[in-house]
Length: 130
Image 1 (cartoon, rainbow, N blue to C red):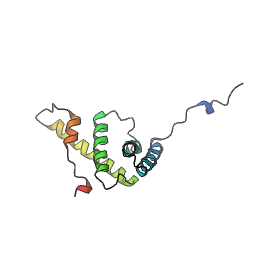
Image 2: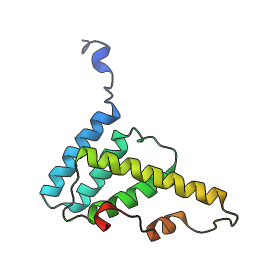
Image 3: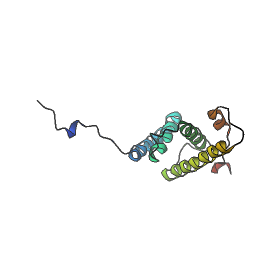
Image 4: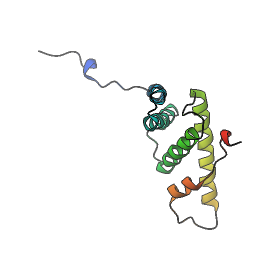
């Protein structure tokens, strides 16, 4: 006995933005439960998915975004942000990253260090710092 049509047996693929919105709702729920670690991870994933970068090949960008977005969230009074705030911070961080990478490429002195450590040493001017 056959169990359904061919279309019923296919894997359903959700658009990244929709999955990102789901991850955002999970992040908010985890924050309400005071599960900060899970909340932070979901926020990062949500805004990477919403920007359609879930399959991004640039691992340095992903490391930079993960680190700096978590610093941004932890610097606030509460671990939270709205969708538009997160999208805006994502875009700002992307611009900052591209600027930093351009500066490294144009530098006369080659960078020989660990990019992750360098990213961690940066102090970006987040709005809550002003």
